[in-house]
Length: 256
Image (cartoon, rainbow, N blue to C red; front, side, top):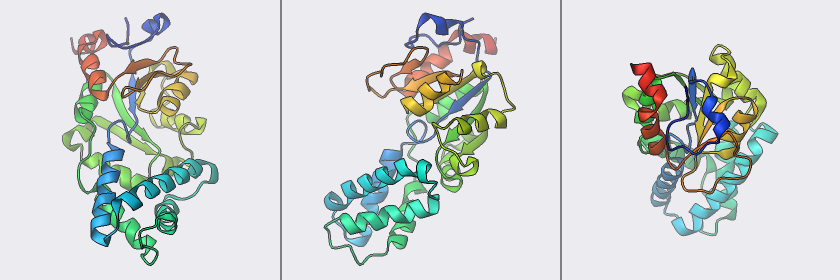
């Protein structure tokens, strides 16, 4: 029986994949709208500290992106990252903010970042649909405290998740093999072929899992499918994935 929901883009060999025993979801960009949450938090910060959003927002985004790319390589702590990105932004932004405290801005931003729910459309529904046919977990590159606060916004759907695995506790980041191995270990070492990874990063949530023998569902959000996507199911959105999951033959067989 096929484990590939209808309307997904996948090659013929993938149709023989077994029904998933576990479905692992990414968090940022997949269940949680990081971009919207971050931009809202920065806009609140600019109002609070009388900064120009046009001057500060793009500089902060750039500094944050640069540091995140270095986190896995340098093993910079999350606590250091949170303050360092504001130190860099304050140094580079030409908006009269050099005298502000990076530590204070960091604390304000983080509070605003997780204060309100910024969930991707159908996030709760996706977890609930997945839990009807498999066991569910969330695997994320984020820090434990922040990611747990995001999960709380899922309400009752958070109970569908058996465990949340964060890079901070593993000491490795996607796409490092050690991170995925830690996920399998936490799940009780199931057959990799019965694990489905769902996420918005082609490298971290699709390509690397496939190389490790997992099933993969990539949420493209309209982006073109890169080369090397053989064996990877492609969905335009999490909402589409959820609809397909609800109407797939595996969902019907597990419920009936």
